[in-house]
Length: 197
Image 1: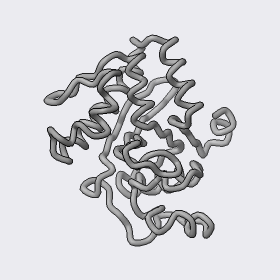
Image 2: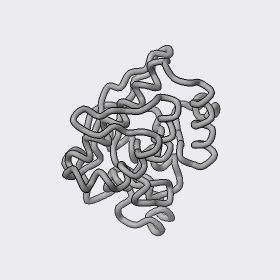
Image 3: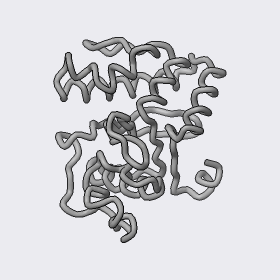
């Protein structure tokens, strides 16, 4: 899940887009992608999973009913459960882990991957990406185009990371900083993987 820091929530930013990765014996591929917009993922009148009473009382009715509100709680294990159910309902695919990156972390990855040029859109660099993604795009593009640009940026950045043509010292530095700052979070329902995380 990719978070937009322009709308801050207890567990990060509001969700802007989602991508499903398939990982098998070290091979990684992006197999599906979606905006978090109501155009792509339904809102529900009731939570898609049981929300503990304490979380429901603190974080309100949007937790578990709107995919954009996955990080309305700082409990990332709960974010995982909700995200997994939303994705299952929308795509039919079951995921066993969720990784969240915010715009700042994704932008910092440009230090390792290099600039990203969006077809029919802007070129995102380490110097302009935060300003573009958190506001400036809305001056030049309509909301649907902004969603597509955000999805393309996430996909291109992940593809660049997976290509192997990245600066490993820069990548390690960025990821370490993102983890320390809470910009990169992960949860796996596979016990051995979660223990390692």
